[in-house]
Length: 316
Picture 1 (cartoon, rainbow, N blue to C red):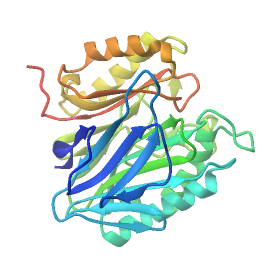
Picture 2 (cartoon, rainbow, N blue to C red):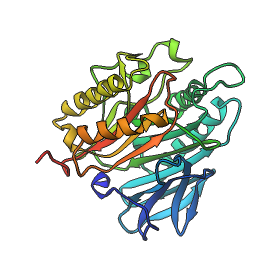
Picture 3 (cartoon, helix red, strand yellow):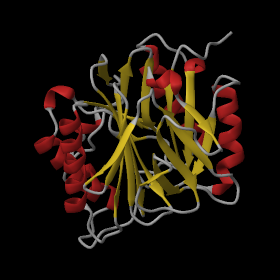
Picture 4 (cartoon, one colour):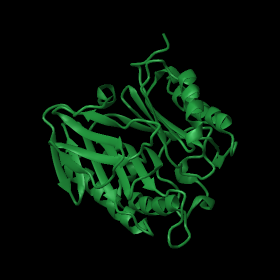
């Protein structure tokens, strides 16, 4: 299973990797570096070190470029990364980039997308129409899902978060035959059913995706139903986000101590000591946790958390 092979290192990746995501101080279009698709994201500040996220593959791994997307795949899993240049309106370019990505999964025969990430500059700002940038992005993404992606496969787990870089960087993972199941959280309205007050098109993702022994948890925040709760209170927002994750993964017989490969996104630099302490108390002592200071998809959210629940980490 790809989740059990997932590692994070801060070194040059070895042969056989599907992908390398560099969370550093530069951003731009993905490219193939030493045979490995690589995406650079401007995602750290002076308080944290950069790091690289590596997705290993099983030989043989084949890589290539398709309409500006970079990709690699082994016999079972596909990685793809893309880039949407900065713009005063993202709808059309997002729809095109996602449409190309969906064409790629069809052409290569990896029809099941199970995890996506989107890193969006000025996410809480406004486009030229006065529409929030995140809602502008969601509009284009939703149209692509409606028109270009097989409805039977469902929407995957996903994260949509801010970045300090210019342009939208995105990447995703898909599989060929593995059993996959998208999961919703009974504490939260499915994102794709949000009312129109959140934008002309609802966000296109599931709260989680089960793939074999791994449960990929989408970016999760202090939202109950479809509404933000505890605006302005970091600790209470953290508590709701953690409870949401515990409820989601608990429905599949996991616990918080099974969560690994965790990213904690926090809005304000002054909150880093608090989120570090809260994370240490919530998660397994051996869990890999990274902290990233960025804006979040709603202006009233202070923290967002994602991870992968796996049997590899246990409470004992």
